[in-house]
Length: 186
Image (cartoon, rainbow, N blue to C red):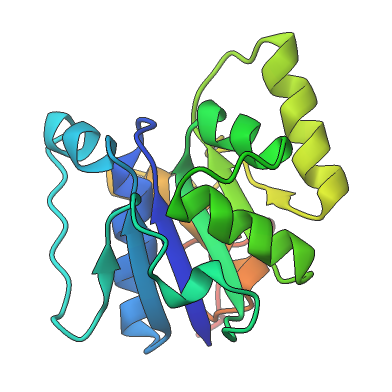
C-alpha cells in the first residue's frame, strides 16, 4: 500500500507520529509532507518525528512531488492532524500548496482521502466545509477518542483514533480493544 501522510499545523502531532509508526511497522510505503507550521506545533507539543532515511519527507511549498499529479499511483492520503484551514482550502479547491493540491488530486481521482481534524468547537463555516469535503468524497475522522477500552495513557487515547484511520486504510492492527470484544478463553 502506497500512502501519502500530510501533517498540518493543527494541534495533535502525536496522532501523526503514531500513525506513521504503525504504518512503518506494517511495511506500508509512505511519503510524508509537512505544512509550514506542522513542525513548529510538534515542537511545542514535544513530539519528535524520526523516520527511516528510506521514507521521503517533503515540505509543502514546492509542487515537485509525485503525489500532486493524478498520473502518479497512490492508494490513499491521510491529513493528520488536519487544520480547519486546510479543510476549508480543500473544500473550495484552493490548491495553493502540495497538501491541498494532493488532496484535490485524490478527490478528482476518486482515491481515499482521510481528513482527521482535531480542532473544536467548529463554527458554521467550518461545519459546512466538512460537509463539502465529505460530499466531494473525503472521509472525515474527527479526533474524538473513545474510552470504552479504558485507555491508561495518552498514547492509548491517541491510538483509539489511529486505529480508526488504520481501519479505513484496511491496514491490520491490534492497537485497541474492539467494542464488546470478548477476552480469549484459556
